[in-house]
Each structure stands twice: as structure tokens, then as C-alpha cells.
Image (cartoon, rainbow, N blue to C red; front, side, top):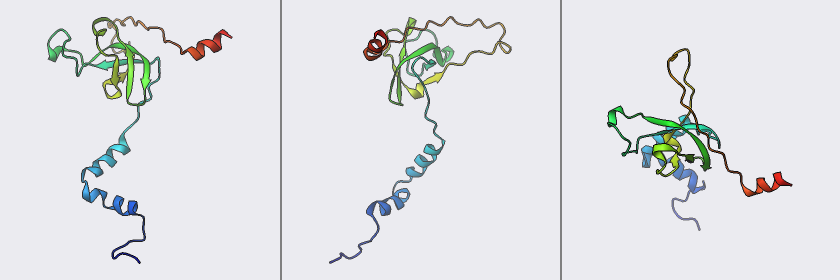
Length: 138
């Protein structure tokens, strides 16, 4: 015997139809999903790290650079986080940052900025896994 009000469609179809009425923020999530681009970082890429959460960098906050130095990505933790090889003043910080706080490094244009000296980049060697080392030795 069928219960009163039973609908032959799948329950998930009925729930999804009413989702925007129940949760008004769901429409903004759909809008964000359409315009969101997944960053395509790779191990060994040069990136700049945001100073948004760094409270102990010397100097006034309003004079502080929004992004610091050029670092190399050492490892990726899924699509949302990257481990960066830190050096210098930031060496004591935790090296894993969310992708939202990392920007790809862009070389300065020499025509627009002729007096700007390029900063020397120190690229640490990327460690290979033991499997790759074994394959290369054989």
C-alpha cells in the first residue's frame, strides 16, 4: 500500500529542487563555483607567500609588503595547500600554506622598471622519493 503524498521521483530530485528556497546562500555557492579557478601549482614552481597572517615581521604594518620573497614549492598537499621551502627571516614559520595565500612568481618587466635589481633566488634542491632513486641507480 502506498502512503499518502508519496512521489514516484527520487527523493534527491525533490530535495535538490528546493535547495535554494531552503538555503538562500546556495545560489551564491553556485555562482562561486562557476567563476572559481583551481590553481595549477607544481613542485618546483616559484611562488610568493602572503604576509596576511604574519604578525612578527619587522616594521610598520602599513609599510609591510603584501607578499614576501620568492620561494619554491617543495610539496603539494592536495589542491588546497602547498609546502614551501622557507629561508631567512621566515625560516621559523610553518612551511605549509593554503593556496589562497600563495601567488605565482612573476618576473619584473625590465622596460617598465629599468633600475630594479633582480633579487637573487636561492632554489633548494627538490628531494626525490626512494622509488625514483632506486630506478635511477639500476
